[in-house]
Length: 392
Image 1 (cartoon, rainbow, N blue to C red):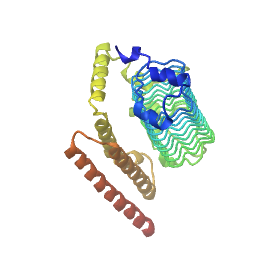
Image 2: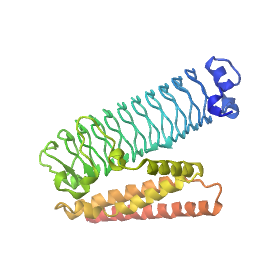
Image 3: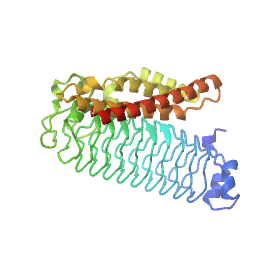
Image 4: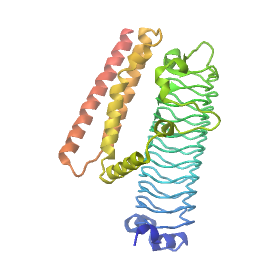
């Protein structure tokens, strides 16, 4: 019988509070993979639990320990994860729509293609979380702390990030239209080919933010702080875009790269839908099949590392981007150094996560590459310090 149609006895016992084992033994004997609606698993020790392919709609995980748990392909719609610990957990293709993660810990959470639509994550912490291709549309992330997180290829339309700490986070090829960043810390965030039309940046810190081919029609940055002219060299807006006094933007109507974006009126449409909306259903099915096969074969980590490496090579072209305005040589050099350093750090972090147990030779090559990259990182730091001392 398929596990999705089998009610796990252990899940039922836990939901009714029956003591079957000490908390420190739960991870060794549990294997959910079943259905348990409205279960009460609050304050349970589920660290390392295997919940792949499970369905726990409306279940209560308040203050539960789900660190390093496996949550792939599962349904947690409207589940409650208040103050739960999901640090180091792995979730790919799971449904967390309408779920409540208030005050939860998501540090180093890893997973692609998850649905957090209309979820509440107020006060959640997710340092270095890697949540690529996720749907956070209409979600509430007030006062969250997602420092150094990866959110590329995601949909954040109509999301509220008020008071959030997102410094060093990365958004690439993502839809952030109608997002509210009020009073947030976005220092050193990377916006690469991102749709930010009609976004609000009231009292938002934008020091060191990189706007690469960023779409800003209707966005309000007039009350943002820390914004310099060179940061907007590769962004565009329109007559409704509001900027701090003394700053200007290119017109999206005269910018060739802005054609990849579509205008959005009252209702935000997904950026990915704008790009792929005309795709034939047969092609969509093919992509779905290939993606599933790739995940099953465990190759997604290698593909992601390749994407990061390719992105780093592209980052080296930042001189071309900053050259669109009359910037000083020192401004270009500083921006280039910051971009290269952060790209190198992301490559090292991505490669460090790879563990190829089935291919020892390949793993050795990756380990050696990490060593060489760290050496290059130290050389780069020393070079930058020498340049600062020399006043260049």
